[in-house]
Length: 182
Image (cartoon, rainbow, N blue to C red; front, side):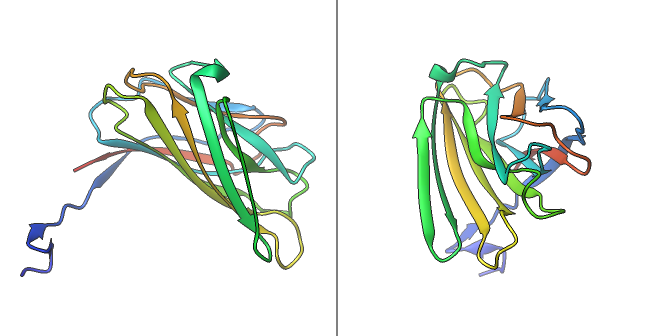
């Protein structure tokens, strides 16, 4: 079999196209509008930090300008240190409890990735998030977050807004939105 096949099926390598890059600073939200509907999934990569005096603040998501918490369901798990595990959830437009705050070690940013597969399909949307950051200066406090936020709406996603619970994005924060196609 050729090296580009798997059990006889040809392998398809997705292509990512950079749709937008934003570097917000001194504001508490970033928004991507007029997202084209020609891709199989959206991917939003980020390196973020809040100016809020805390080790971490919450991050929220709004799709298509919908800020109604009751339209979203959220669940998250996190791990850090010597096996500490936790979780959160609820009817809220939460993305994560772990956006790096000003009390985290200097130069520590949350590095994360959001995926929205089937964003053009006539189904409720699942927003998948994975992120991590250095929570404090001890030897065990790198923290890892995995979450999902369901948006109970069948509309094509054409706008994404990421908001901080408190504080503003700081210098060197960056967001890159990609469309992925086959």
